[in-house]
Image (cartoon, rainbow, N blue to C red):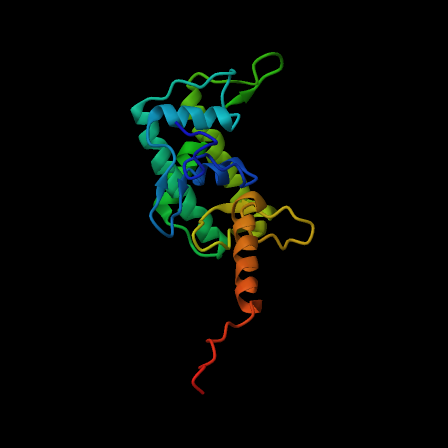
Length: 201
């Protein structure tokens, strides 16, 4: 299970949309991928942290749910990346996402329960799939970006006023970029050290 003390495995909720945060459960796609939902219990924990659970506690997640979640996640990632560059998506990915989006999702409720669903885990995945469909088909797609940190692969919705956001978040990659820039400038501006003069001359 993830924890805030483990920055590599901790769930990043910086995407601005449930589908982008879900895709982020596989990190560092450009390097050695980091699986942030290694088991069913961790997936249940992600649903809980994402606010996609009917009650206060995690939902029951089976091994089958975990397999389905990972397959959907990768289809969503490929679909989103294709849409970002205006490329034709894989028909198999479209069919899979459409099938998931067509199922009953989490129904909002008034009162103590935020949501209700007969099969909470599958309904949570359906909610994520529908969010991706709405994002790809809507006007906000042009604001989806990939973090400019070469070691990061997180997608995010740029909600900045100037639309110039470069990093998944300032707390994560933005801060690392600032530190790297400072160190680079420090090395460039450092005075040159000359070798000691030859006393025999």
